[in-house]
Image: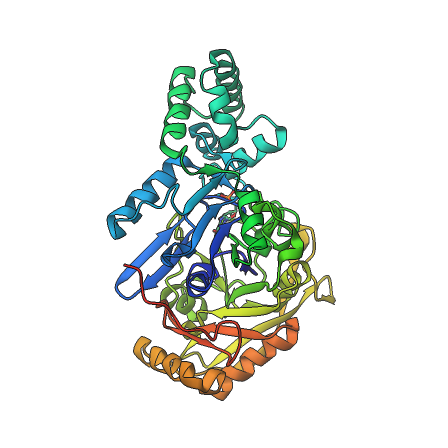
Amino acid sequence: MLGAQWGDEGKGKAIDQLAAHSDWAVRFQGGNNAGHTIVIGDTTLKLHLLPSGITAPNCKLVLGCGMVVDPWVLDQELERWHALTGEQPEGQRLFISERAAVILPFHRLYDAADTLVGTTGRGIGPTYRDRTERVGLRFVDLSHVVDDVGAIRVIADRMNKQLGTVGVEGTIDPGQLQSEISWVIGRFSDAIRPTGPMLDKALREGEEILLEGAQGAMLDIDQGTYPFVTSSITGRANATHGAGIHPGHIEQCFGISKAYTTRVGNGPFPTELALDEGPGRQMSEMGNEFGTTTGRPRRTGWLDLVALGGSQRINGHTGMVITKLDVLGGMDELKLCVSYKLDGNETQSVPASCEDLARCSPVYETHPGFPTLSPEEWIDLADESRQGGGFDVLPKTIRSYLTRIEEAIGVPVVSVGVGPDRRASIASSDGPFDIHLGEATF
Ligand code: IMP
């Protein structure tokens, strides 16, 4: 399950729906820059590190080797889960790859100096940077350095020099660093495992694995709107690699996109609308478009089929999930961006240079709108679709909007989100999301 835009597409809800049918849910990149929201009845779960598959009690969970993991954030998230459900999954059904990189307080401090990208400030980029420079610590390394006072001093010295280069106040004390590492080992030693071989064995035994993406294709370090991107490969090519298994295992690849577009942080956004009026404001207010991780207001705009086409090119989705369609209810007309105009020429691909992308103006197609429905009415419609109606329960205008998306990217839409609740989804009949929804586990 991969984000096809700039993140925040609603992956948490879609993964929650599939998890009951999977033996494993695996995060393969990123860290707690992600924010996945799941709404079940009156309970809203906000997850940053724990795979969204946690809601299915029989689903085993992995924080994969491609991830950067902040152990203190994981601890807090597990405490909240324990308070909600009484379960302590770590070491039981939640495993952390021994190869995953550890986010330390230094990385958070260093990330706070970012003024260019508008990062989430969670230390993600600096931790990946240390990994690439081969000076970072992975979970497996912690027990090797914890008692080596000399090595800890070298690490702390380097961190302090780095902080000096970006003018951040605060120093890393070697003794403190040593006790932090020691705490991580004590807290998570039961959960730290060779998860790649574990998943490989599970596959050989016929088990099903759900690979859970974070962020989205347009935030991909290689293929996104560089430098306004995250620091990992968010796409299909890394989904198996970041889980420690091979790409031949992938059977289906779902891309997920809102029925419109949002973006947090800086960087060009061709279909951006004003946030304080008209459709942009409706998207923001009705869609509750505030970052799950940072609370920042998300920028809003019309659906960008050029960007989705780019995402399709790199990820080869086999089906698309379109979310938050209900948010567009009541608008007179809906716009779809079908190409960009750059220096008088039309293009259907996203330019590699952000300067060029910032100069692109969107070319729109206009489609008729559809009426507003209440959350209950949408859930009734979704119930009707589950009784065999599939997409036939949707008004004609919505179906033609979805058909246009399918035509543009050449992939069928398999599920449409019409509200935050787990039940508020309409799936195509006999498609991969046409499934019985399990009961909530809490
Ligand atoms: P970083 O991942 O914290 O380094 O942030 C880099 C860029 O990616 C910033 O523009 C963030 O706002 C954006 N970003 C990171 N994670 C997410 C996410 O889960 N959803 C949306 N945007 C994100």
